[in-house]
Amino acid sequence: MKTIALIPARYASTRFPAKLTMDLCGKSVIQRTYLSTVETGVFDKVIVVTDHELIVEQITAVGGECFFSQEEHESGSDRIAEAVRDMDVDIVVNIQGDEPFQDRKSLCDLVQVFESPFIRVASMMFSIPPEEAQNPNAVKVICDKDNFALYFSRARIPYVREKRWEVKYWKHVGIYAYRKEALLAFTKMEKSYLEQVEMLEQLRLLENGIRIKMIPTDHEAIAIDTPQDLQKAIAYFYDL
Image (cartoon, rainbow, N blue to C red; front, top):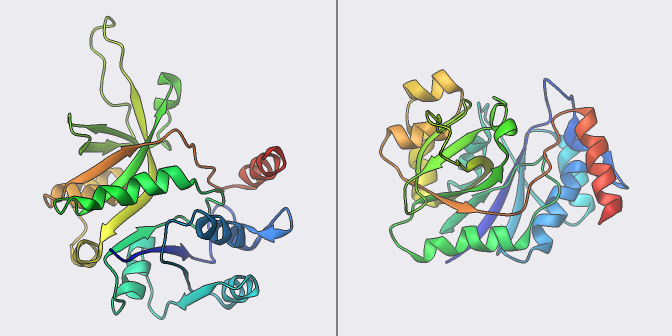
């Protein structure tokens, strides 16, 4: 199978303007994300998909490849679908541009599930403590016995009615892997009811009967959404 990683890199950001171009220990956030993805050795090709010339300049400066998006998009999934439309590829992995430290084992595990012809979409999840499960910004997922997602929610799920039960909570890690046809089909679907209620686009897949295989990981990704997150990433970098 030919497998590529696409990194949607939108320049504008409401909470942290131009965050992808900010310095992270000598390289920008998007450069760090690109290079760490390449260094995993998991992919046949890694491409940054962007709407801004500055990001193109930064990626080409480190020898990387970009696809310049010509269309307006509501989400990263739509952006990478535009890029992949005419590519000869089997598996597409959507890497978040603001997560500069990628993990080889997690990405290997994610890609390997497509050895089964029945898997169309896969993603990852990370175990979190009950107190973090209260946070609506931490998207939770519950799965069936085969680790296919049953539901994603900003609410704390499952609800524990009787305290005798010890529940494990899983946080969704926003890295998706698709068969090419599944990605293109997904972006042509209308926004679904639950997707709009929870503001979670992965619910569109579940509401349309597309199963999502969830891969447990021990790697807790660092996502840069605020200037404070960038400082955490800098501290993490110096601890490596």
